[in-house]
Image (cartoon, rainbow, N blue to C red; front, side, top):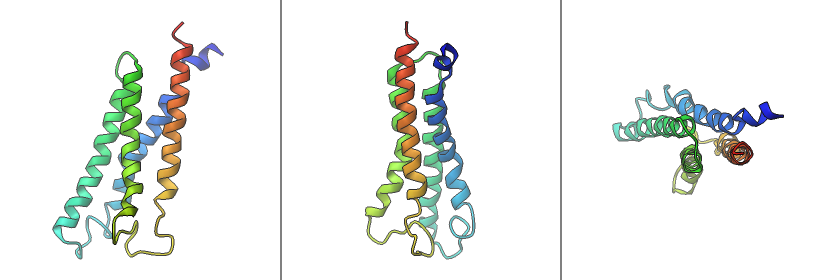
Length: 139
């Protein structure tokens, strides 16, 4: 039981989500339907590139706060926030007029829910597990 308390399962779950946010946007958008789409104007490509880079930046910030030497509640809180931001903004995009999560729009238009909601669930679960582990291993 003691070794289970030492394994940072919560950090691993949050890191898994961060890894998905690091590579997922590139897997989804580095193709002919997005960044290499000749029909897209340069400004649309700018925002697509910005979004991919933001995912990478948030992921790296998450991993830094999770795994830097020493541990603190503030570092865990920061990692949890940065791990959640990309996913939350992905969900919020549906609130803007004329948006679609796929080109061309289709019936399962908000397929991002398949990724964002489980990702947020993993971050929340990781946070709860890590907070519990932190309180149990202090003594």
